[in-house]
Amino acid sequence: MSSSTTNTYKYRPVLFFVLTYFFTWIFWIPAIYVPESISPVLMLLGLLAPAVVSTVFVILSGSDALKQDLKNKIVGFYKVKWLNVIWAVIVFLIVIVCSILLSLLFGQSLNQFAFVEDFSFTGVGIAGAFITITLASIIEEIGWKGYCEDSIGNYMNWFWESLIFGVLWSFWHFPLIFIHGTYQADLMVNPLFVINFFVSSIPMGFVITWVYLVSERSILACIIFHFFVNFLQEKIAMTPETKCVETIVITLVTAIIVLTNKDMFFETRHVGRLLE
Image (cartoon, rainbow, N blue to C red; front, side, top):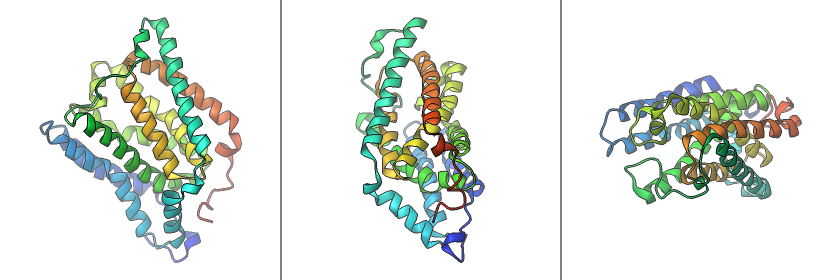
């Protein structure tokens, strides 16, 4: 996995996803069958896979430009457009509010405008759950933004990259629906809720790509946004039915983001030139 010159490094998205899925699922699938006291350890090991694979790809790339690019994305705090990150969080809050209000039409309650006491996943406690959400945001974004999204985006515009990444990112979570105590497993009471979870990840792929690009490909910006999304999804007392409504709302918001940032999503000037 080497390159003789920094500007001719060839990204390997297919190999990245094959290895990431393998090293994630090799831990998550056994977690389905072990006691709940042990499964969180296996889930954490699987969660590390995207970041570990991403880092190994960069280290073994032989490309100084790729290594410097990862360093800049991690420690380049100056790149973060803080107002854009705050705006993205506000937009997501608006999505939640609109979703709850629309859900009233389907018999849901205004009591959803409240925080729940516990997190959806069990076995780790409140502090452990908070740490898990934080670590998940950090670890996932180092993996997905450290190498993955660029490896796809280097070959196409960011619209198609966001769509492909959203689908693959969504399916990456698949084993979690069978692991007792996870948010995804709780959705198994209704197949519609499970389908909604996987579908909702696709428009979210577009939103987080937008956060990534408007902050000049900053990993920190994505970590912050990812954390707030995870936290709000866990703590706001939305019902699974309302989260189905939320998917429709976030899809409409995604369409607005894409249409108002057409040059960002459809330009091809960056293709083959991300490291320049």
